[in-house]
Image 1 (cartoon, protein in one colour):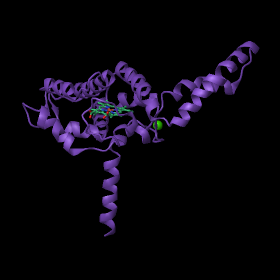
Image 2 (cartoon, protein in one colour):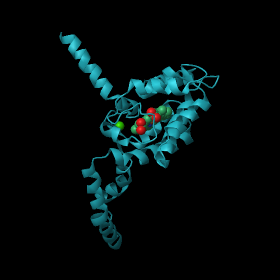
Image 3 (cartoon, protein in one colour):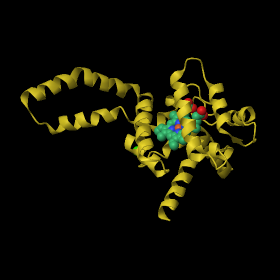
Image 4 (cartoon, protein in one colour):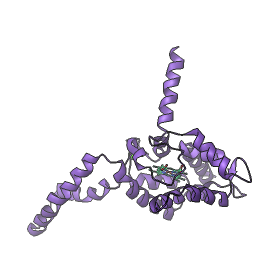
Length: 228
Ligand code: HEM
Ligand SMILES: [Ca+2]
């Protein structure tokens, strides 16, 4: 009885945490936060170049950070900036003082806006997506199957570049330009990195991106290539 119920619990936990698993790969030191340099390192680890990794780190962290931060902390920092930082800056400049703590705060400050909290990652969902992650970040198998039923015309278990574009267009919600761009970027990067030699994006690859296992696999492949 016990093992099966603990297995059920584990399964339940996994179902609930799939989007967290997607981003957990990038939380290199497992502290529950994805810093911009961790996004950069993650992209490098799966074999992306310097430019893509840098651009991705800036845009992903800038784009998702505020959505995953607790409202309280965000408000606290806004208050801090408005009421404290500017007068303090003025005061220190006028007095030509050199404050260690002040410099630390000033230097760390921009990063507060670039931190992604893994536990709140479902709040960073955008519109015009496939719906395979639900609002709680859970994996929805029927939505996953729907991708192939609706859009995989040439091969039942893979998407061509045109079919992928067809899916992206079909998922677009009117005037949701941010969502269009976010979905386009996610799927295009996936396609460019993982298509096979015939230009097909396979179902098992797409399945593996959802729970992040794809990233681990790519990291292994990349490090094996490097060591050859
Ligand atoms: C090479 C790296 C990455 C690739 C190829 C990738 C690809 C994808 C794909 C294909 C989806 C599914 C979208 C859909 O179902 O329509 C997705 C969703 C998502 N990804 Fe990534 N991703 C990457 C890295 C990241 C990173 C670093 C983060 C954040 C730290 C992130 C956060 C998200 C979030 C929040 C979603 C949910 C979007 C939604 O369903 O509205 N991803 N990603
Ligand atoms: Ca981390």
